[in-house]
Image 1 (cartoon, rainbow, N blue to C red):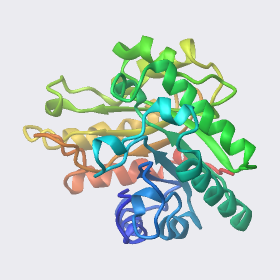
Image 2: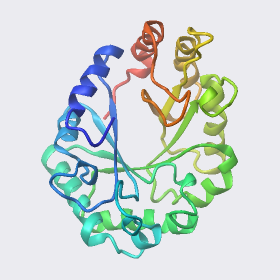
Image 3: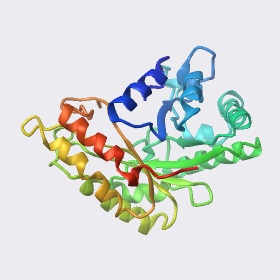
Length: 292
């Protein structure tokens, strides 16, 4: 969901009406600009997010960028690891999350630099990313923040396998592992890939090379639309529950319903047939289990 709008709750409600159920998790995105009272990008847990979070879990994606800022304003992993953003950004956000937990009793999923395997060397080296991640984690602990579920989210592209291994902060610093895999089709000029083809190989690789027991999250998944075969997207979604049941340890799956940049990159659900298929998926008992 957009992080920079004041109608987040309304957009969540509209999606829920369309898909026929209340969401368990709502995913929002923020940068690491200095916190102000007016710029929502730089505020974890905006008023709208807290409203949405009353009945749903929140996944906050926190990116080491300053959207719209100058080149000199862009944070680097080295700067974060060395404590250069502690006073102006890290500590401020840590206290916001801590206060939210104390007031509501609720935890939040927090991701630092999702898809970090696409951000090196621009933001720094893989080792600097690990240092920055661990610094934020340790700083939160020092400030007594105990309501964060530390969520490490990679692309999951297996041609990035070496990078992903080098950029994993370690089991002590990660509570959940997420990965973002799509059927991009013409968007990335690839073959049409089934849901199983987009998820299974990455799932198995993570279990073998990163962690055999951490909870897993399909933090973004979705499919392009095939204009030549309009029913294809509906069939793609119809197969999701059967595949999920075979992915050991996957505890959450977040459908992406938005346009990516570029031609043929609209990954939203298109047409009533596809929406009907997604509603049936969302109603599957396997995707409606109790959660804490």
